[in-house]
Length: 174
Image (cartoon, rainbow, N blue to C red; front, side):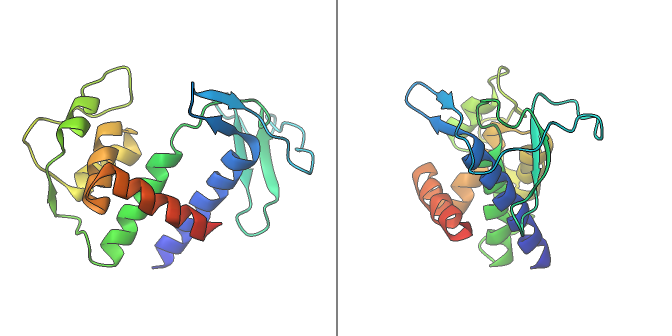
């Protein structure tokens, strides 16, 4: 349970950073920046040598920005949905809905997405079952979209149900 609380703090901090600095309009995938009430600290590239276009570290308890690199630059949201999926999988394991060794057969949509080499993926074979652990690792290590979709189906039953559950969880997190 302690691990889940730590992961929740990380997801909350990341979500806060994304919400504060980026507002994504999914109609046409337009991205616009929103300014916070307080100014961002100057970029701190000299103290950390991150190989990233932009980064931000936020103290989950206080909201204080600890590190910023191009934090006010408009960028599309990347892996927040995968982090929320990972969090929801851990919750489902914690409450007994899923087990690490439980087999999941990805649906057709997840299997098809997993074949798209322009996206981060681990190719999933049609009709083959994978353990929750295998899909979880593919989601977090390789940022595999198809694996995340399969896990979302395992948690929510359908993509729509999972999205509804994830939104409710995000609201609970603040």
